[in-house]
Image (cartoon, rainbow, N blue to C red; front, side, top):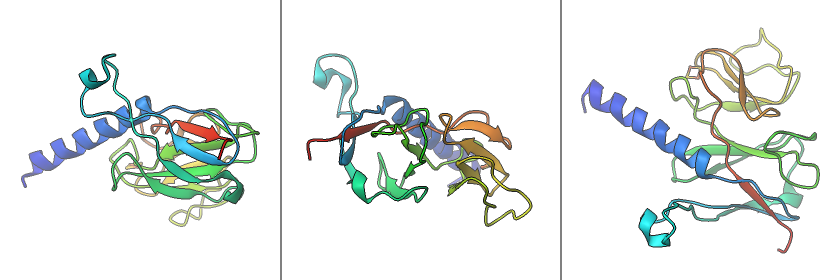
Length: 173
Ligand code: FES
């Protein structure tokens, strides 16, 4: 595969993740999280012209530990995200405390996968900094995403937040 083909593939991959983020939704409930919607085989299949995404159970809310992320892949088997309970109201948050969020972990700069950093900790790749909030930290070039504020970029070169995964908090199961 040529360099141009690889670059094109990465662009398409990021576009897909962006589409997934925008298509996803957040809802609230009591014990189980599910994705709301996904893209069906064709937009016309629904008759509404709107694409939807499949709902997928991620985990039981009761099993979540504060600031301990749960990793999952969605919408594809190799597209990583994380879900985390932040312990305080967060933009895009669901659950009784509106503090549970989920974001793609594919950096919007050059596509590296990044990890979660609780507040007042140092990323494993950079002991010279301490995080001021719960964030995603990309070790490739120091990109930082504030998970309490919709994954807003708070450091490094990324030009935009990572896509949010819309969650449904289902209290019936
Ligand atoms: Fe993440 Fe560059 S790829 S900051």
